[in-house]
Length: 124
Image (cartoon, rainbow, N blue to C red; front, side):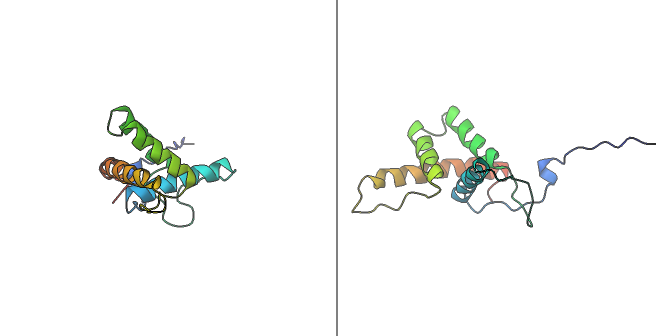
């Protein structure tokens, strides 16, 4: 009787839908991790066409970018803070001047992260 070998398929062969932009990927990854923390099981490609990565792939890409100096400390902090909220910062609001620097930092950080995620094929 022959022995069968089972191996996972490489990521390049897995069909999936890339994200539209880095913001969508970032908030999706934080939502998945929040769901996992609440007890949900995250399984790839359930309910149709899945995503091209795992939630941790997006977070690891941002962390590596921060470690090599591609993201400043305040940029990484803003990404983590608003990712945990699962909401991007509002556009600058004249009634809340404290939110304006965070919104500008958020956009700058996502622009840097977008380049990395495009190279990896996570963002289209």
